[in-house]
Image (cartoon, rainbow, N blue to C red; front, top):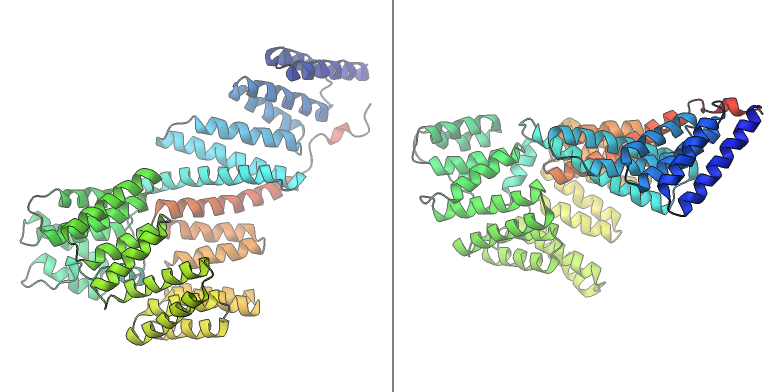
Length: 509
């Protein structure tokens, strides 16, 4: 009789459970084998439990491939069995960790981690979001995003960002050799003219002509080519060229210092090894400081890197030094004011907060054409919930540079905070994209807003558009994680709408 076979199977399962509790995993597997063989095939829910239990024993024995097979069989028998979904996700994560870093290994890792994320998303939707599972999902997203970013970076197609982004990059340098007009009629002398016309695609070919012809500005051309490779996000090629310049005995101090600054920042952008990257980066900046201790660019750019490394006090010292060396370095001055404000806010020092605000009032008078002064002052006012005043600052910056899409986006988000009108916010961000179709901040913001509205497919689509536009591998990994989280929710919801397996159990025996 079928009920007798079921009772026999359940007895074997119980015996297997006792052996499992006694850490006799081999013996437990033998009992689970007997349970599975004895169980009537239409008792799918019971079979799902037996396969899951055998998966647990195989996992304890580090037989991960067998554990994965059992999880899969368990889920086939009961596609809403949260325990099996949870275990399959964890086994997949362990298997993914054993894979190599070549292209094949990365593709397999991405596939496994994506499935693990989908499994855990289903599990959470079935059981509710538990702290342990949320922590697991967070670690999954970091590993998955990192693997996807590494793979995407290997095959990245050279592409310039918007003209605004390129111009903004050069505001961090007051002594870049590229910005000094060159006399004569040679390829490199024409490069700056094309920059001023926003004809960026013509610059690297002109540099190549100067380099291959062994012409007088060969080293300047190499440095400029490396700079525009950075802007095209071709980090490996840029790194090689910068290193070649730095090791060239004929390289002048100014060119070498600029190359060291750019290589120092590039170590952080590549995100290969956080500890080693920071060490290499600061070593380059320190070498640049020895070469040109009075170069404000060294301190401005090292200050920005130190902020990224959470070396807050050192960053403030660097920005102060940049401002002391070059009082007319507008970007350094307003960055210093903003870091002063953050420090004062962290310590709740009201007198220093007032001093920072007064400093920004002075800054917009001293540097009325510095868009960053208005943008950072607006952030300070927004942090103090002086929303109308912040709005006025964003508008002044936008009036000064109507093509600055970032200011339009910040203003849209501020208006959302003031009114709660998300539809109007979305309209304004899409207007910003008409100005700058390569604005990753716009796409990321749209994705975040759609996440809040639980429009997960739309969110994933926006993150997909942002990913190829960001500069660093770390930013790519973050966006891949957001996209994967949204996709996993879409897929989990779709699977949960399907007919449950094991329904034939109802009304039987």
